[in-house]
Length: 310
Image 1 (cartoon, helix red, strand yellow):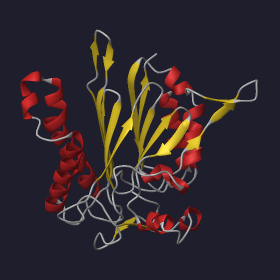
Image 2 (cartoon, one colour; image 1 turned 30 degrees about the horizontal axis):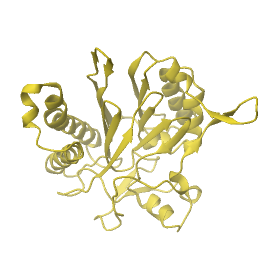
Image 3 (cartoon, one colour; image 1 turned 180 degrees about the horizontal axis):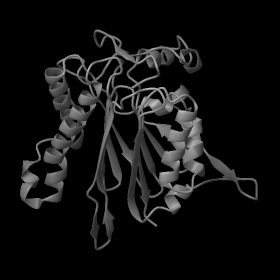
Image 4 (tube, one colour; image 1 turned 30 degrees about the vertical axis):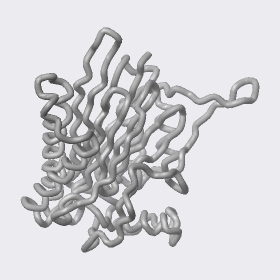
């Protein structure tokens, strides 16, 4: 969901930019370095305290808050951690999904829940189960990116047919060993914190973001404006899906969040919290607290995955 005014959808996807597999960092999509000066005057990248204090392996923390204004929470999330121990250590397998039902549309909470559950079932069937079970390896019909795109498309069809007046964003990440494979529609976001740098992975599919990307306005000028999406799950019978692949290694943190967070905090402020809090649960709690202190007009949902290999 968006700010207090709620989200709207354009009638079509004409404003949609091309969807490369990755975004070249520039402008507000740039990398935000967090460094500490060494006694000799140089700079060294830090491994965040929330990584150092995490149990060895994969840690996933999630939370959702209705905010201070809305009566209902239209966000939905799902996390699944199937990591397992091998002789040489832990193999990470996890699925993270976040959806933000469309404010101002009927059944927004139903749309987000339906999208999350439908997408999860597809990824389980076509990617996770074939990976875990040698007996069904031959059943894997798609690449990982194709699997994620198909999962979003199936979720889109389910929402479009069952809830014609509703819509939702959908951002998900499949963590497999030392990679994170992502699929994204809408304006929920995914960030990666690695080697002290916070980088936004996803592109907002909103008119405001498009105007900023084309230099017609600035992020500051768009604050407080109604957030109009040109792409969302359930908007039409077909959907375009952005995909990305990122390294997810020791010291990495992957953050998925609804716009109830990022509409209230800049990327640099989010980075500061992630680098300063003592553990993952405290970081998630702090981010939600700040968003609420600054108005809390929207639902706030976060999923934080931390990789600590010791």
